[in-house]
Length: 431
Image (cartoon, rainbow, N blue to C red; front, side):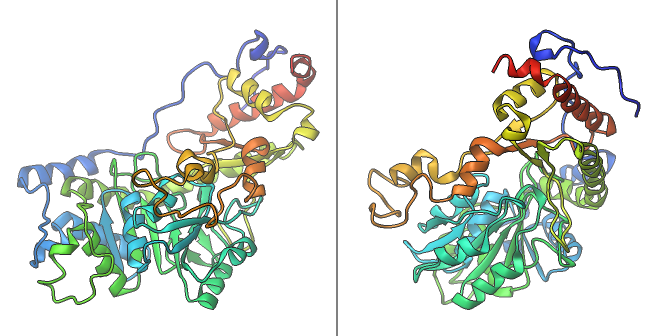
């Protein structure tokens, strides 16, 4: 795409912006295939096939079971358990570890809040390890140092679409007798040393939320090769406490159940959506590679790293901003970019442990359950210095590398960077 002639005056200072139009609505190629699947369900009038009883309906309706079979085949695992959200899937996975109240699960502080909340939902305690400042995933050394006799599992996050160091985390888990869970909501079809992420830990979580690579509006899938873990999660999604007896189960650990069931309508949408995942993934990958190539000339921006023997799913395009090389703050740079009409955000999310619930150690009632007192797990500022540095000063993200965006949106982003770089003295004069 040919570059347009750029205004010499930054939009922040009254010049003409690079982009004037809003971005197209996020889409996942929903079309006639999804419509026909939904119509089939509506005309059949069975909008949910589930029943919390010891019958074949314990496992859901026709579309739910078809979607689970399709996910199991696609990701080459023995079992796929569908639920109404990835948050629900995380809770089911945490429960399946057998974690006791007050025990600990190590996870990332740089992720959507539900990753850690799923631990609290089972009355366990999140322990936050720091991340690597290149891949933005858990740092194995920090994880190792966080293990205590109370640790039950490691819940890693394949953040922004890049794989965690899964072999290293598995080695730590094996050494200490822990379970490894992958929050793979942002990384479907990413690969780690030839294997699909979400299939390397004992349980992997996929998301079907509206914002993700494919969607059913809301929904989630838990993947596992372990039959007992799959059954435990099936109990958890479907009123387990009234089903375990009739189904001949003796172990009642963490069997208080919920209604986490996926509807037939959502499952019907998921079937053709899953068939489109490869194409949607290819678009993200192509646009992200274009953006990486074109940003290479700007020494104050570091594009996403892709580690050896890994591939990236590019849920978000995450860059590091060097204030020293740019000669201005990240905040001012991002403000100038947004004034040019392009999508960019600063810092991603606040480190989870800095949120009020963790600072006050108050999740249930007016006491400190399940956190305990100040002498227990620390949530003090500074416990994860890499995360805090990225959040406060370095990380920038954009979500333009996704359908229905095209090369045009990438080109505009680069043009905005180029325009700011060429007129950076204008910005320095107002900082």
